[in-house]
Amino acid sequence: MKRFNLIFLSALIIAALTLAGCQSQSAGSADSFGNKVDHKIIGIDPGAGEMKLTDQVVKDYGLSNWTVQSGSESTMTAALDKAIKKKQPIVVTGWTPHWMFQKYDLKYLKDPKGIYGKSESIHTIVHKGFEKKDPNATKVLDQFHWTPADMSKVMLSVQNGTDAEKAAAQWVKENPDKVSAWTKGAKKVSGKSIKLGYVAWASEIASTHVIAKVLQDLGYKVTMEQLGAGQMWAGLAKGSDDAIVAAWLPSTHADYLKQFKDQVTDLGPNLKGTKLGLVVPSYVKINSIEDLKD
Ligand code: PBE
Image (tube, rainbow, N blue to C red; front, side, top):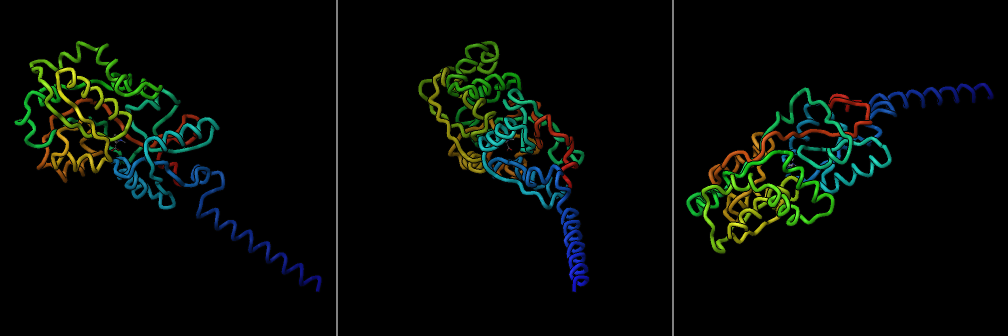
């Protein structure tokens, strides 16, 4: 009887060990990066081009046990802040220009398959026909271009608690040369209306408020409409908004441009040198998206 118990017990132990072995093989070793972050990529709003690209990353890098958690830019930065305060691992969808690279020590994970594309630009786009309806405003929108460093100043100031309108007005006041290049050849108007659509991403809050201030100083009555990315593009195509300065091209918003290309006019880049990708705190050991595989 005793002997039987012993054999039974051994068999049980062997079975348990085998099971544990199998499990750790399919879900990665207990201390893998994936297990530490629950196989979750902290994403942003579902309409963002970067979310689509991240779904593609999950497919193409074979990260089938990972989920991309949607939320918003602010839920993403809140999660990042919390993890960094506790020095915990985390992986988020990030982009440049963004104040988070000034506030935290971060790195992009390498993307050897190039899913996030090369460095791109942010374009100014108007509703088709707006060029004819208001060539004066179109001239200013077309001449509007600045650098990631310019944009970062406004973003940081907003991040530090200054209201977006004030931060934009301050930048405009401090950069008369740039502003006069944008308004060169444009006339003052009296109370003409213009509607700008934008998404509440820090970069777009900055650019939209700056160009709005410049148009206001010319006498325009500017309305800014905060929307989701899909709504912003659809609204521009419909003409419920006249212009956006928030189109990330050629990759991030490629599908939106393709869908609405006949109803909009692309005035070209207002900022060059953006970047997208998966971002982790610098203290995290992994360096490539490939390292997310267990
Ligand atoms: N972003 C910021 C946007 C464009 C601007 C990268 C979150 C997107 O993914 O659509």
